[in-house]
Image (cartoon, rainbow, N blue to C red):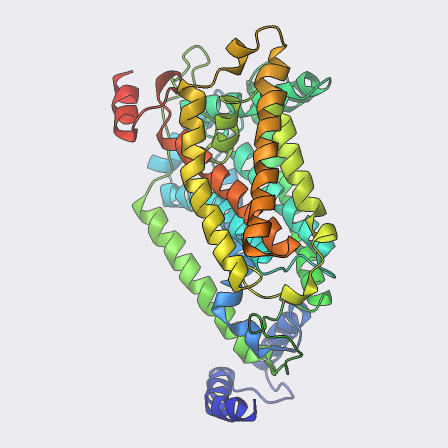
Length: 471
């Protein structure tokens, strides 16, 4: 450790000299500029600890995903406020406002593109951040409650994207929201009532647009900013990012610490600048989608939910709606929330995929999911017919509980087989099962996006494109 510290001193001194050469301020401020820079330092050290473990500066540990989410949230807030000045939440005016924004307002198209793609990027980044925390064991004690806060933030990010989806009031948005809100109807007893409250009536209309606008610009952002502040505070209070150790090597390791300024701050600045440049270039090259004015009387074929709900929409084609839209998502969410309280293996905290064995198991589980999920989709499409085979049973049982029970039995069998085959621990086997389910859901989403054509029939992507254009 002494040798590595000695080797790192020249680079550390160089970074410190660069930082001082940029700002050149004494300990006691002598000008307004120096006082402002000291305030900036105080703000940074209020958010961050004064020193951090040197290992946590490795990009491969976090990939900067949490900071990326914060930067994207800032872009969304700034561009969102700008868009509010050129938008009216009314079916009679919303679509014309978007057209005017794109054609007559200086940089209006760019601002809308930035807002749209930043929202989509934040959803992807937040999801990847959750996966990073899971695969490095960052949800375990004492971070289990912050894991739940993170899941809540991911759900709010989905809600922010979904409520903003309707605001352009074009065909794509109108029918995607119609399909998406239709999933709520399948909740027993209160589903219809919740759907009516969300829509502000029996169907998507002016009240729906106003409800979504209020949620999108006020309630959801306030909730997200509050929870993000708490989330960051908890990260610092819980000791920061989990410190990795060398896989499969037990024992305590000496922790070397470095100052937050400039070591951590400069890395965060680089990540932020690269992200802003990437999202800006992408927004300059690719316009946010906008179809013709929404027409409640003309439904597109196929009518699809937003891409992040297409995995659930695909499940609706294979299970009873109650099972696909409520039971499976509820079981999945409940398992994620309870995971830290059952997976208490602290020895693998900070190690990607738990161990070398865990990496092998995860890779094998992903391969099984990649091959098995399309085969099950094809079998259900062309071979399996539970409703026809069990005509005397209610469809909730024949097309819901029976296939769900079969899937659960397959998962239990997979869990038992992987555990015995690799002589694995519970946490390694839970991780492999999670990877299998994650891969299956990603495959279902891909099928829903590119392989479902008119009538939601299975088609090759090039056939889907030609069929939609012909329709």
